[in-house]
Length: 213
Image (cartoon, rainbow, N blue to C red; front, side):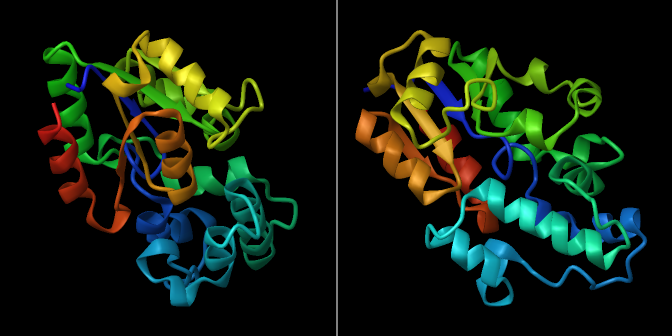
């Protein structure tokens, strides 16, 4: 069936992965270069916590909470929370924090009357309102569905239903894009078309998405 809508994860799909911005966080936190020596999907051998997350031992939110705790202790901020921690990767706001291929593809989709909705689990938990407003996140998509509002997170079927409802399209007419295998499996189970985003080859993944419509 032709693609009439894109249902996109936001972090590590539209917004650059934090793993690519570790040098920026080190500078913001006053840490020596190379202090953040874990690389998630870019080199799972460096990151036992990432391997635990991928194995289902912890959730993504738990992964980042533990990273915040460890880096907080490392940087003399023992009470550091996820929001403060992740802001250190993404401050100051700048356009280069988005994958350029993501922005180009979203603009091309909307010009072709393909609707675009972000379906994110934790945008409000991970990024401040001021940051979101300064980055004009809402201007990129027709709607943002943040599962943090309802507490029903991907890969729960209800999260995908909320995204589908925002698009006002049948599941089979929608391409869902996410970097996490569990979310891709959940999307397939409800009948969405899917693309498993490869954050280590973002440009190639976006080329595939663009070719789909």
